[in-house]
Amino acid sequence: MIPARYAASRFPAKLMQDLSGKPVILRTYEAAVRTELFDSVYVVTDSAVIFDTITEAGGEALMSQREHECGSDRIAEAVADLDVDIIVNVQGDEPFTDRASLAGVLEVFRSDPNREIDLASLMVKITDKQEIANPNTVKVIVDNRNFALYFSRSPIPYPRNQEIDATYYKHKGIYAFRKRALMDFQRLPMLALEATEKIEAIRYLEYGKKIKMVETNVSGIEIDTPEDLKRAQEAWK
Image (cartoon, rainbow, N blue to C red; front, top):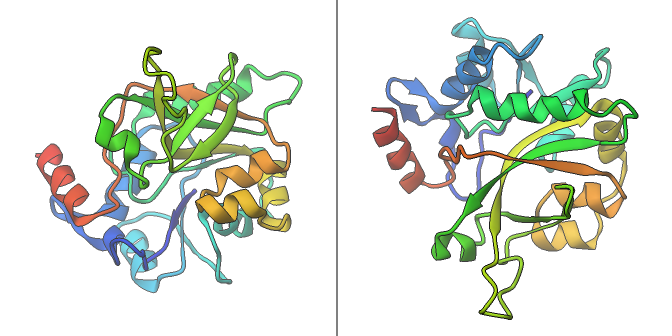
């Protein structure tokens, strides 16, 4: 499932921007299909423009029937009546989505016979100080089994002791959910930490869900700003 809002606060209509001859959202959809990991791939959108772009290209799209605060809510509406166990959320602004990273996320559930894990997601090591400090980059810290402890727009861990070489991870916005966890998310109210940080993954932690993080070496390019789009266009060449 690829949630796709037309409006975006930092970069309006970013999903319809041209990326080497095709809109960003269509590039992302094609990348997800090309992995051959999924039974079905859908774009879930509130926009007739995005819906028509996908379907006219031969893809599958669903129109949201309600307004939603975040991608998890949008996907929960779309899958409510579907007989599925695992749902993967690929962000619409990630046209460089790769097969190996997604396969690693799915492997988490194959290695969980007791069904203790609610979600799996991706993280990538970052070393650039500007990126670590950038509030648009969501950071994650994990325990010794790579379960998420917390997500933040602030640098975490905070380098109070400069003699320790801390490792920083960026959270990549790809999730795989058990359906029950996703439906729980939809009915549970937002709490203070999520409201403060504006990071939907925090709601799962606040309600005791287990999120297994998978490290990837593929950083890709998330298109949040016009500058990101320029970098993506250069990379695509």
